[in-house]
Amino acid sequence: MRKTLQIVAGMALIATALPANAASLLDYIGQCVPFARAASGIQLFGDAWTWWDQADGRYRRGERPQPGAVLVFARTSRLPLGHVAVISRVVDSRVAMVTHANWSRMNGERGHAEQDVTLTDVSPDNDWSKVKVWFRDSAGLGGSVFPTYGFIYGTRTTTGASARADTELTGRSPDYVGALIDSYAH
Image (cartoon, rainbow, N blue to C red; front, side):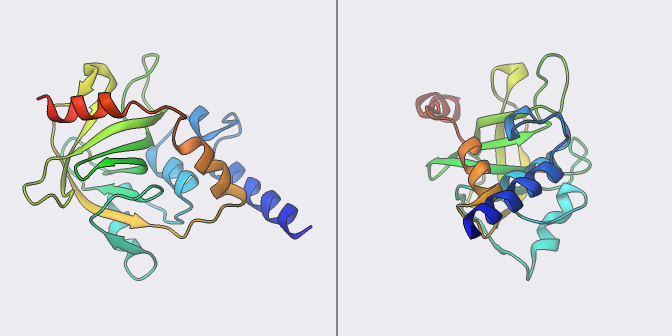
């Protein structure tokens, strides 16, 4: 009975975090912040770039990717509200994959969720403070370097919303080789 209640509560959390027409995380169309909140379980609000300071004292923060952690992008002229993306896989010390929303155009529009997108650390100190992100429109890593604050680590469980997010956060067969080629071939 208790497990059933946890699952129902978790499903309610996802239902309130995503639009009614999104049957799963990957059907989501909208901004990156509600998507990251639903996918990670990290309960922060407001513009993406503000998440780093909001997390201070509430969540662990660091400079190493871990599945389920949220990478917070700084505010720039290209990203005036910043961006947040959830780590879905760690490939090597400088390559990870993210699942996020509102990055590439899909079907001619922004806002769609993308799963297992290549993310490469291009910082001189290997601290993930500067990254490149795979961009669908260029079919490879974009040319832009984006500054980041670091990773916010949530307290994930394996029931309810987190369990559902975990099953959708990464695919069954992510393209590790493609991610490495994208990252190191240029």
